[in-house]
View 1 (cartoon, rainbow, N blue to C red):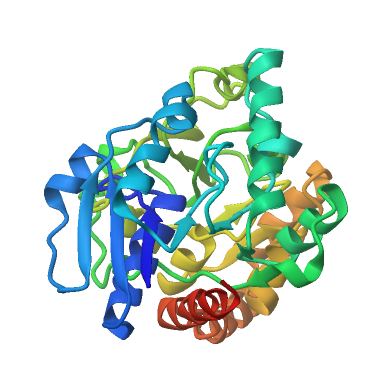
View 2 (cartoon, rainbow, N blue to C red):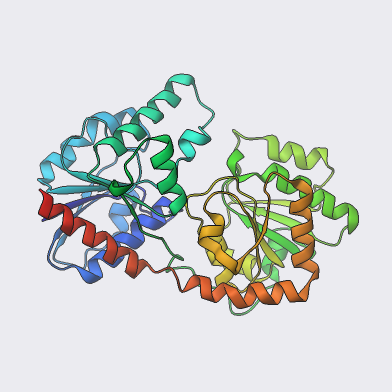
Length: 370
């Protein structure tokens, strides 16, 4: 069977979907030498991707995500490759692609929290998602929450959806020795709480800053809050809120953090905070657990499903409860010890090898159907 994988998110600066795509391909090729794989890559990844298996070929596909060109110019690449099956690793499948395919839907953020764009683009996003799930032979999801969302909001039959959990990125190596000079680089001068991720509204960072302000009133200048992640100019509210609450010295907008610095920011933090209103899986709290720091997390969406008893939870819409949760983890040795003990037990639940085996089984089952 010739299986195409849309790997355009794959790349050296990959996050989220790109990490999923990279781990899936890497682990599939370890266990499957029978099927032929055609990997569709953008320029930077195409240049760096080294073929080591005889059953793999790569195709340069320099077509941007979420673009008009994606909808009009991607299909000929698949047609030329003479594929039996295509795996779209995200919802952005060409609407007019009608050959056998499956799709991974990581979450429904695009529907629940659409980007700030014009009405027409929002409707197109909605159309593409609905088309992707309607015509897919199978849909892979990383959590029961996404499965439930697809069933309830897009009327996808549950038997069409396959739950396959994701895992800690294999290239994430927790820091073993603390390098204090990294802290100076990011203007960190006190014990701190850490967050890394997007700065979009569903990440709920405004409330996190407000909860930190509440904590700061009780314990003036005792801690800092470090928010790592690319600064999003389309959402200036976060910086404005920090300014409004006079927290410029206490809340650090660290911006994009290089891979070599990130483990240090985890391991030296007092705790990791995940305030999200909505997630499909969530890799950063697993990185925090691997770094042996406590995790404080929202009780919303799939987060308790994924983190289990490895996190200390709060209602993400309740600022006082969020503040109390941070205070509890920062000041209670008993709570901290319990979380640190449970973290490794959570991590062993998830494996990219298992993810690849389950995905390969779907490919094989779909071949029998066609």
